[in-house]
Length: 236
Figure: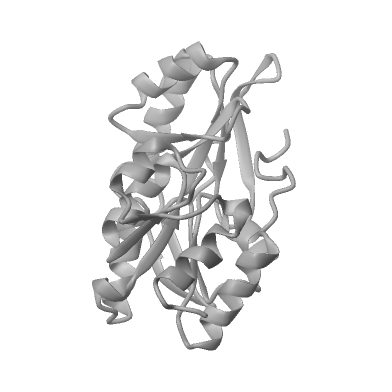
């Protein structure tokens, strides 16, 4: 099974340059993502000072851990039981690797429940009706963020999301909320935009992100990051 984010995601050159200019002006930059630590270090390490990974459950500033909130064994057990009943596939993650289980590629895979700590999971489904059933079943456990038209989604497990992690970081670093900015485009970004002083939605965002944003910028691949940073006077 290929990890769902191994699909050619690239950071536009304009965004790379904008983040570099932002950091050169002594602004701290965090990348807040559902992706695991090993992925962001490899692919995004040059763009940021810190990383909020697993949709808010693990935060690093350089090599210092600021926030660490793994799933409990009971949480993992409940999620697996629900997904097995619905014949869905799933991939759980920690800081080093990913672990598969459930119904993947036409057959059932037993999940190794001895692997801990774990921080979040992706769910795999066989169509949009199947996704809707999964989303309803997990409604009181997690928010699912679909990956475009692909049949998989990442999860934000309720109790510790991107917004919670950002609030913790702001307090830890003694940063005033009004001096914080965040960019988002997916449903897992709503809590993040609400936690900061200035929530910015990409032009390609899902509608619920645009509705909670203070400002809607251009599309991600249409220089949207640089455009918004200039609008706010953070870079020239």
